[in-house]
Length: 306
Image 1 (cartoon, rainbow, N blue to C red):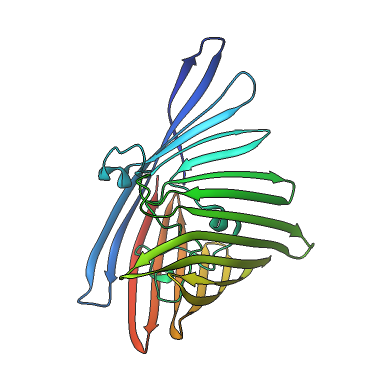
Image 2: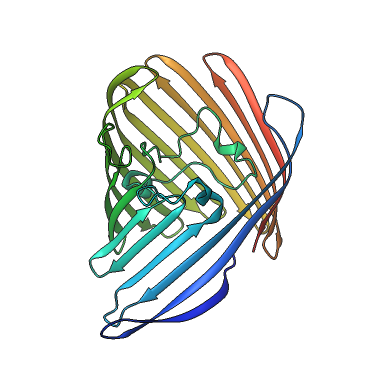
């Protein structure tokens, strides 16, 4: 996404001056989609994001981001409302708000390419690695050294009211260059304590692994997760394959859940053609099967980055 320099200001502190940059970027979509429940419909969406960054005299960097399509929920400072704030230095990076938990930060997703209605990643077999729970207010510390990185995070359960357990996550990732191919490995652990869903209460936790290999124009990814959700054992496996050549990108992914003996699976397809200048033609398709009941979705249109 292309950023446009919007303003440059000077922040005057008690013992020095720090410069800060403010940028604005935008994203819009237009086309048609089928959600599987009716006739083909028109589709449009728009998103405007502001980014702010600066650096202290001592080399400490800081920044914040605001996603305007998510801020309408209110101004509750204990909820992220689509905002992110970070501070970074030699000690690592601390990020708070609408950001990935440590497990999601470490893992590689199987979805490749884009679709207006996210059809390729919204099917019943897809796992985006980021089920933090609670209200989504995340605080994460991460530190990277060469090819190795680790992170720890906590997601508050219910705006600090104390009625829902917080989610604690750990993540480790490692990347290596093998000449003809690059490899990215991820390990994530999540403990959400005791949760309640549909009147059932029980432990919720997971241990997840991911491996992704890129060689030339081809990328392959595999994910595996094992855990409990409100006391019921589950596991998930996901596979992704992508191909990029010049302006074309094609991504296919498949996934399957087994939750307490009940299977759900699905696959997704994304086909993109980059027109240049920030415009991309996107086709997305998703097919789901839950307890033997099938459903599918589709979208086609233009994604526009500003």
